[in-house]
Amino acid sequence: MKDESQASKIAVNILDSEGVKLDSVQLKKSGNTNEFTFEYYSSVDQSFVIEPQLSEDGNLLFYPQRKQISVGGECITNIQFEAKTGYVVIGKIEPATEEVAIKVTNKKTQQEVTTVFTDATGSYKVGPLYDDQEYEIEPFKEDYIFKRDGTTNNFKAQKLSTLSV
Image (tube, rainbow, N blue to C red; front, side):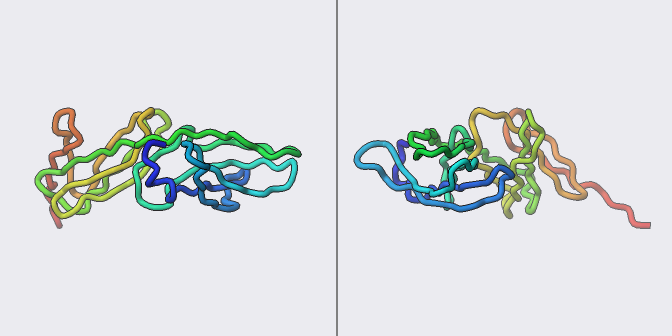
């Protein structure tokens, strides 16, 4: 980890095989090295998933995102994750349109990653996002249509007319 100032914000979530959170433990610096440790006590022959995550706002992401662990009779050591700075997508809706939902979907899996909303200036910010995945960014607001402005993450908004009868 190049930015050790964020290390105190990293928690390691312990999940059961169904993804239910069992516990969350903080990382501790291991001497003067670039290694961090945590302790979690479990019964023998238990399987669980460990998932590092920033406990506060930050820009680090972990590769892989999680690891499956099986506990035998010995302590498990040397579980490695790489922390990288995630990338951030910044864009704008013009003319400025507040409360536009910006839906971010993983292109490969078609799963929704997150949804954020534009502010009063029409701006939005999404991230951090994993750099080894591709994403689809789609704005939505009722009674509007949106068109991407070239190859940027900016969109042109057009309010649709309404006819009440």
